[in-house]
Length: 354
Ligand code: NAD
View 1 (cartoon, helix red, strand yellow):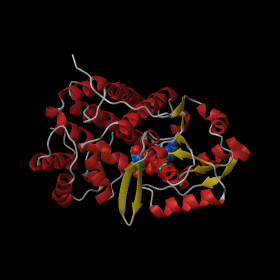
View 2: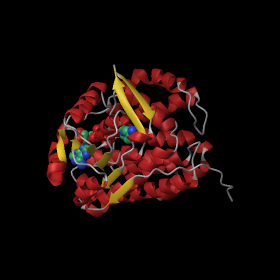
View 3: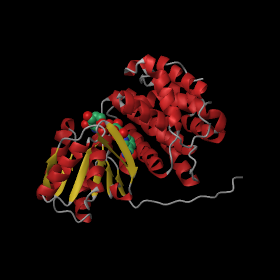
View 4: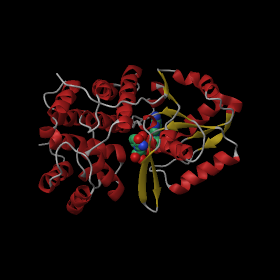
């Protein structure tokens, strides 16, 4: 039996979960004491933001629809300026990780509380991690103040998320839970959430392929995404997340797709050093082996399986290995050049992990 020894701090976010829960938006903005909320979205989700604005009526200060991937510093400054000019006392972020990121950039330098309405499975709304890109370099940090105060999870809002993005976003979420199970600061509470999050997504994602507007399946996936995002926000990530960060940052590869391709290979790499975590991942997936189980799930969902198809140049694999070796971070298995290069080779080719 394990002798537990851990530190556990729980964040005080308020979560409203369920199909149709957007109807509680007015009540939730009132509970935050907000009278002038600025609604944030990407240009593509303007319609959803307008719907939010209409729901809160004269409590809406305006809509800022310029959220983009990786939060460029110019966009963050512009949004802060708009919030100030409009006298906003709250920001409502509706969208995926990019829109959450913009909300966090505002909260980082103001007192504005964030109300998050996630429409993907990235999980950013549950983490104190923020990222801002300046002069082509994405800097990330942690600050409790960027955590949204209230999160409304309404599965009906993710029905419009295209199936391909739903699948990769779901596997992106699973990556948080998988790495959380072997985190250096793992604790039994987060491990429970991780295993349950993996189970929910492994059950929900295949149902989306059958019928992408199935609310029960959307609900499972969003529930899983919440749990996985909580794990990401509470324990440290390792090889998988660092590799994806390097690939995304240095080669501008798409976020969720990159996570999808790398995850089985990162798990195969770490498997010998983290047997208990692998057992729990496999159990959640109903598979015999964690890495093969994730690979089979992704293949069954017709997700991208190779870095090649994401546009990663083959002749950059050596340099990518070098970058991955430069960064020091905790990982169950030490970073070994030959094995890492083999991991990237397998991922580039789209082979089964091994
Ligand atoms: P995203 O937010 O960039 O969204 C992708 C696209 O899908 C956008 O155009 C968006 O408008 C659209 N979209 C989102 N939901 C939709 C819906 N329901 N219907 C139709 N279209 C919809 O993608 P993402 O994968 O959610 O987030 C990726 C970004 O978030 C990356 O920059 C990543 O680094 C960051 N991230 C940060 C954290 C963190 O903890 N800080 C965690 C996860 C991801």
